[in-house]
Length: 170
Image (cartoon, rainbow, N blue to C red; front, side, top):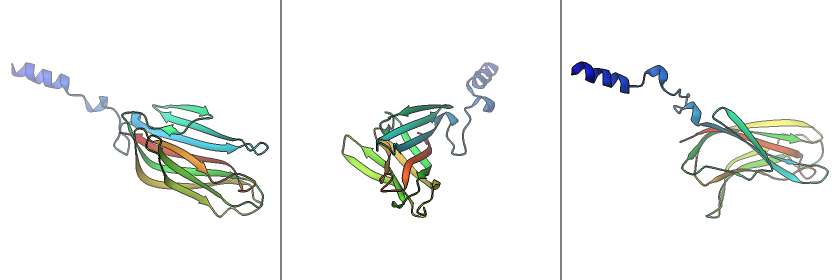
């Protein structure tokens, strides 16, 4: 009888090598997520386009002309960090400024999660500038995450903006 119970316990115990690998955050690797939110402006027509990429379970999916990213039902997104880039054009416009917004359309809520300003862009310079934001932010189901750009060239030196978020699902 004791042998049978011991054997049953061993069969129900999952060996350490068979457990789902976890990250340095202590969450399963399958729960990691990255969001690539971008907005660009066609300088000849002024038309703005939103693009969105989502990395989950080892694959990227991209959508051009996307709506803001909505946290899926039954999930909570923990955002750990963000990197923001702007492509700026030569000219006399104002420096670039963009924001990462949280919104809950059903309740009419809209609020800022992170603000990125690029005041160090000199006039008549062209190139890419980058900033990093590190914090912890919880985004519950039903909320959307989107990028907002102050304005585009020629009023601003910016012609494209991108924010990449890293985090995980609970």
